[in-house]
Length: 179
Image 1 (tube, helix red, strand yellow):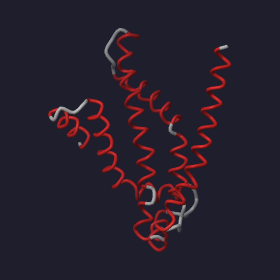
Image 2: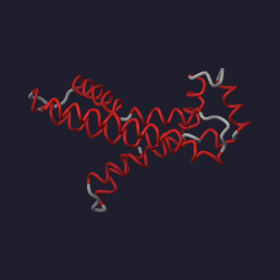
Image 3: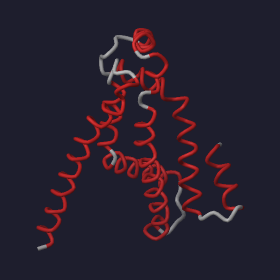
Image 4: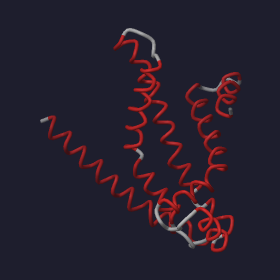
């Protein structure tokens, strides 16, 4: 839909293929999460036991936060989904380019299934800290619009520091292995 329209329109305007791809992802995901965010908020709250069921969650959100409560996680979900989608599609495109080289044939259904699985699993591992931050923000009930920025900073900053520590540890291990 949206992404395909952009992928067809922007090249006619002389846009770079990479810019066209990223723009398509951004616009399509932004539209998608406008629709999906309320259900994701309710689902997350019910699955984690914050609320007992869907109706209790909807009622509680409306009473304590109003309509804003359903969209509390919109920006964090986009911040998770944009990098995930871009990385996943980039990995998958690279994988599809390797299939003819490694296996001597164009990607078939099984190749696409295996590649999609592997690329999605790797992308999920890479973007896991973003998923944790997004879930924590979705679960922060009753904070209201006034302190959303503070909540996001309180949740995201420690996760980024943890990720930096993990990356540093991996870099050290790679250097030691190279010696």
